[in-house]
Length: 478
Image (cartoon, rainbow, N blue to C red):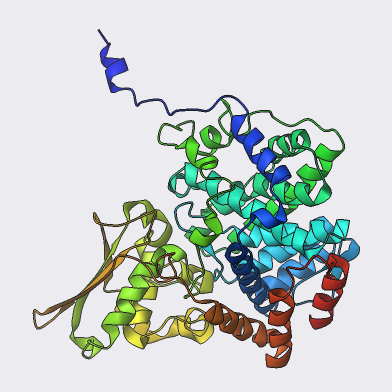
């Protein structure tokens, strides 16, 4: 008969054999061929990288981008890797750090919904640096990028979105060992070395969500730091440095450590499920709004409701329904969220974003920065926005949202968005991704150079194009 303690203990997860996940990911990274990847996956990969590059170039025009560049330039060594939006070429690790930061800088980058992770903004910079180091073909570059994306989103999916609940950012944590695979693939590491690289990167993975308290700039650094960590780990493994053999399911592996010792809800099988046959890049969403992806369902609903609303003075209360797992990120502390201190604060605020959608019928970059943060119509309505838990949420498969507006007349208006726009079932079309990249990059480069940037990215999946020539062309635009 079981004791009461045994009866109440949570079921242990089905943990794989020690080192099994790292070994399988290493073998995939080593063995997958360029031609084994479906053409549609490769085409979509170019659009995801273009999307990130457009954001990266635009970020160079912002205070955080210039401050990061100035700070890192005091440490950075000159090299061959272009820095997006700046007339500079740095050494591989330094370039990966700044490029990842810039690509994530506007919080407008892609998201794998189930993993709640931004994969491209770490794997693309890691691939650029490693490809330039090795002068790989651009076809090899694209394959290595996809290796990292597939690894990062599967690792993040193991936790079912639980990292955010304990204050860690999976885009910093899970991208680090995945970037080691991206870089290691291009550097020609063996299966054993790729295994070791993941174990080394375990000690470099980092990123907390404390920025949510005050809109600090620190989250922007996480993907770039992960890309840099991946390059470092791959180089050390290539030289024979020994990493932890079971970096994921070990006693002090990634999941037990970053989830506070409790991995009972982890689905370890997700780390390798469908590897090489099911391409999770196609389940990775391009953002239609420059805000935390967790807010998109409610933004969709607010914009849809905006045309039905009377004068704002007639609104008594607004309720946003959100997934329980997202509350700490986009709803709390509620007073801070109702009056954001800066643009980054606004991008993680359900009250501000819902009020913006209801008031303006849109949420654009201009609506979450500068003078828009002092828009009294939006701020006044944000004070009336509260949240409740959405028991019908599709999280983490979808970032569902519902907005309910109660009028002083007693009438109630409501709009539900079960599947957020940009999700795999409602993807942003390729041509709209291109238009988004031109608009973003155009803030720094102008329209003609932005169109050239698009041509450079969309034509790069070629065996006859080397990374050095591609990097020269990219550098000439910045």
